[in-house]
Image (cartoon, rainbow, N blue to C red; front, side):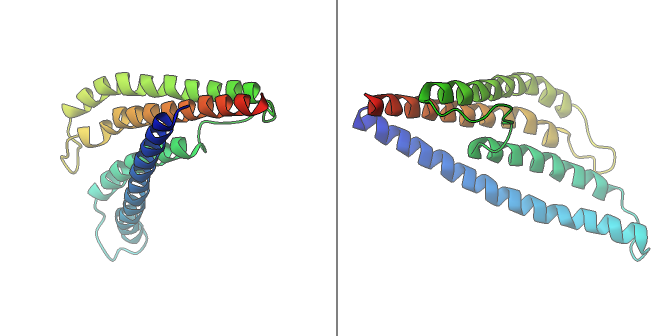
Length: 174
């Protein structure tokens, strides 16, 4: 690879890593926010100090859905999700590329399905409101195509990195 391509890849990686750091921060905020409605539910059910608010369950569900989608997106970036090894890690560069490439292509395939079919799912959510809070269900339904696009982006970049690592290992072997 020439220096311009290496520089571009490095810059893209920095941008994506910075974006992922922003997602980590957002995930922390969402988890902290999740403690509020869940805490209210626990106190209301077991102490009777405050009345039982049904909207807290809906809010907890909304936050939880986004927490799962953002958490899975971070896991795709870090390479810690969707990857169960049933055979030992390959030692040879080409076999390593095949092994990692297969996983990343499968992630990308499912991610593209989430992105495409998630749009219809989000449209379906856009015409509904939640029963208690009367919030538009697009708030949670849009998380599916957003996660699909981010999974595709992150897995695609990791696939390019795997191909680059193979090329580098092949050149070093010669």
